Length: 226
Image (cartoon, rainbow, N blue to C red; front, side):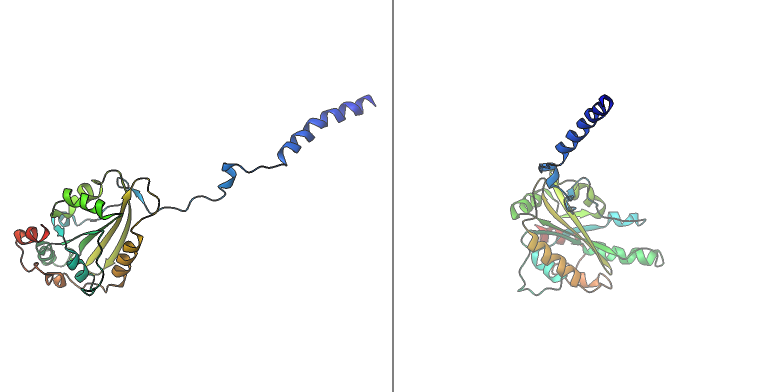
């Protein structure tokens, strides 16, 4: 009998420990049963920039600011279509368009004729105006990553890339670090849909028909962007 009582007394602590586990009260740790959905936004220092592959000469080709009307024309949207007030766009200069053709000819077809269009959708027009004061009217493609994308300190970006024949579109949504959501999501949606709906560009010559882009003089491009 004495041995039986000793065994029962040893089992009791185990039973008491189980009773503490069963009455479960949820905590903040328990409420998070699934991880947060992944965000497209990354710090400007981490987001992917423009890609050039082995075509290093393309880095010296330039892009310039485009007016809202020119952006609509590039996207083949009617003039009456609502503009994108929070969008800042860079399109190839006429020099770049002609240089691509020359490079392609000199390399017997090995050089790329594909160029790039860079579009920034800011979370506010005020933020866009701030960038407009700092960014140059014309810039080599090779400096876009460092001066435009990485230059936006304290910002997060979501990057979208679309290949449309001879033109690759890079779209960056820009917001302040720590902001939840994106206040210009409708502008971003409309812009992305417009790019998706575009037919492939066979070459750059269509862009030469843009207003004030009929010459290769840099002064004309600078005047337009002012």
